[in-house]
Length: 172
Image (cartoon, rainbow, N blue to C red):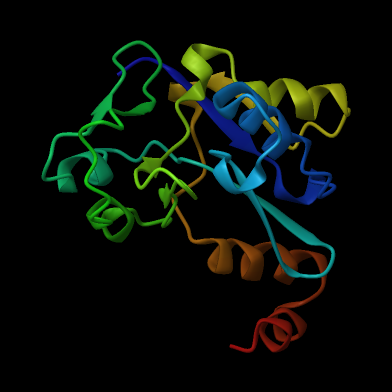
C-alpha cells in the first residue's frame, strides 16, 4: 500500500505539545489535548513521547472492530473512524500493539490519527517549532515498530540516561 507515514525522532521532542494543540484545533475546533489524535506522554521527566498511529501491517485495530467502524484510507494509509458506527467496545485498543486508539473524552467513540487527509497538522506544528520530532515520510520508509508509551519511554530513556536508571524511574 502506498501512503504516508509520520516518522518519530523521540529524542528531538521538546514536550511542547504543539502537536496536540494543532491536532485538537483541526479535529475539534478548539484546544483540547484530551481529544487529540496524537498524545505526548512524559512518564519520566525529560523524556517526551509523541504517540500516534503506527499504521501497522495488517491493521489489527481495523480487523478487531466488530461494527466495521474502522477502515484504512487507500490513499494515505491512515485508519479512518466512522464515529456513528463505533460502539466504544475498545477491542481495537486491545488489538493495537502500541495501544494507540483511545476513547474520545465526551463522544464515546474511538479516535485515531487520520493523517489529516494527507497533510498532518502535528507535523507542521513540530516543523514550525523547528524540533522536527515528527516528519512526514513515504509509507515505504516506515521504520518504527508499534510500541506502547511505556516501552518507548524505557527505550528512549535507556539511550538518554542508562537502562538501569530508566527502569528504576519507570518502576520496572
